[in-house]
Length: 417
Image 1: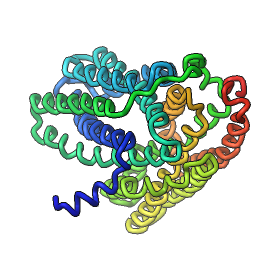
Image 2: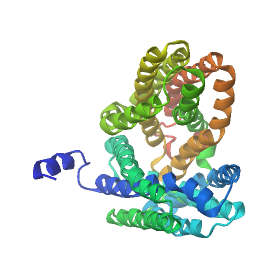
Image 3: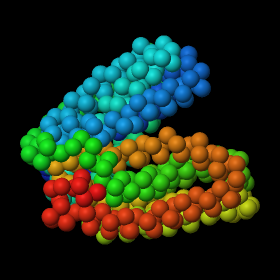
């Protein structure tokens, strides 16, 4: 790589400091994640010999184990310092990942994947608190945008590496690939040690471990954000099924839409996030996301009525609008989740916000499949209504949350809810 390209690449990174360290850690972890996700199901089926239905059931049960770990572990991070908890949980998750090499049946899969799910959920909450505590307030949303962009870059790197194992189709290559991901998972949290530890405040040690669950405005925003995040499952699951079963478009258009989505996130997530550094800007971003996602549903439904080239055109336009809605939804969610959480309880509040997303990931696949593939354009219209209403309610809920966060009540937030 030429010096000029290196300089240009460095300019895309956050300024030196905690934000850049977090970016490096996320890049390393996402390369490993891209590798592991690509090969794990094939490994479990081809090497371990588990049937697909057991793999699906095992992964679903494992996700349920980690579903509610974010809030209590986030509270521990608030009380003991997020850096140490994030590093410890990251290293433990890496160690447990080795257990996949010893899985022989669905019970082993549930145990290993369930432990990883719990540790990952807690680690994500602690990392959210680490961002809130180490990065200046005005840069927190921008930092999350950097992390999301670099995560997509890491996945892009990890996918073709994992392709080596899929091409070789040999047990020892799969094992080597899994061990390589474990090494990356170990390095990632260790990089966080470059960030100075943060001493928890006295308020954090006195705060209830369930304060976030009692904060009704914040809980409402968590639910609304969860409804908006259903669009991820629309893109990852429903669009391939819709293209193949309801439109005249060729199946390869799904890959084209994936490229549009990934490249757009890498190039534009940071830029789109600039207006979400305040509660007003963040709630406006989520409102606009709801509007865009609602229109996108109409376009996807319309794609079923056109000829091959018309369907391709409509799907591409819908995909472009979808990713813009995705960018705004993510940026707005970060702004609201950081700004409306008390500084001394960021861990458990970030854990709650992440739990909403996790619930949507578990419920949405079956619900969306029944809704869209069963009801077709009527299902799309219902989903459009959900996105529209959720987006319009976000500013209302955000103003409600702001009213409970007056200087007089900041220290007694649980009572204000």
